[in-house]
Amino acid sequence: VGEASNGTEGYHIIKQTMPDVVISDIKMPFCDGITMLKNLRGEGINCKFILLTGYAEFEYAKEAIRYQVEDYILKPMIVTDILEVLEKIRTKSKKREEEFLIQDQIREYLRMKRGDINDIMNNIKNYFNSPDIPILYTLIYISNIFKERKKSILEIINEFCKKNVSQWIIVDMEEQKIFIISKDHERDASAQFLINLNKLLNSNFKKGIGVLYTYKSCVDTLIQDYKTLEEKLPYLLSMGTNDPLCIEEINIQKKVKENKIVQLEKSFTEELYNQNYQQCMNIIDLLIEKLKNIGMILKKYYMFFIPYLFNLISI
Image (cartoon, rainbow, N blue to C red; front, side, top):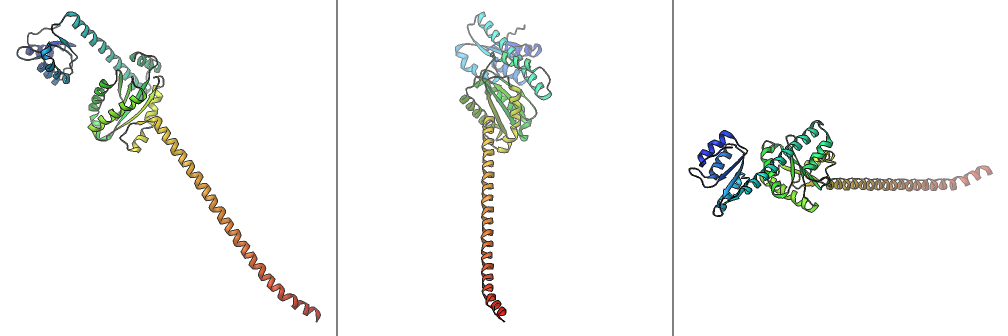
């Protein structure tokens, strides 16, 4: 535990001790709390910040949101206020540790088949506080031109999830893939969630992002569902669409396409049969006509030779 009497002193103590949590007033001599926070964030120091603020300073305190303030405590404060905020931070940190564990487990299992799949499933269920939950699986594909900016894309997705769902896990897969597991979606809401996410990504990265998704009633088939999403990636890329694609819709589209091909083949076969039949009938008609002509010629010669034969016999 460290103490400082002003912002400048606090800045140096924080840099030296690297605490987990900092409780700071906004108004301080030499350097105010927000300026101190801004400078620390600029140097990559990511400790949790709690700001003490009065009603008159609250609008000013909102500026600190972009510097990732963990919480605010209104003055005059009491000890229970601080304890309550610290407990919230502790719970959130524990959740974050669980999320990191699950991310690593999923990544390891999907890449190298390491780990116990049942253990992974149980950890996910515990993380989401439910044994049976509606889950939205989303696979984000990043085109070659934007794969170097994957870190920025991950940050955008994380901020978006913070505002739109209560719980989510983002797994950084291979170079061009990001896998998202999120809950609290109804089917219609999940579609809107993905449309908004897709718009956000493509507004920042200009048609360089593809989104595939599937909606499930539980996490028990997670591994198979991820593999199915991966298998559908070539279809997503071949479509060249900017809209999110549901794998169930892709299956329907493929089935419709296959049915159309079958119908086309059937139609072609029938047409070919009809053409061949007509050709055969034309040949038969031609043969009949030829035979008729031959018959008429034979009849003509027959009528000529009969009298001639009778004359020969008479002689």
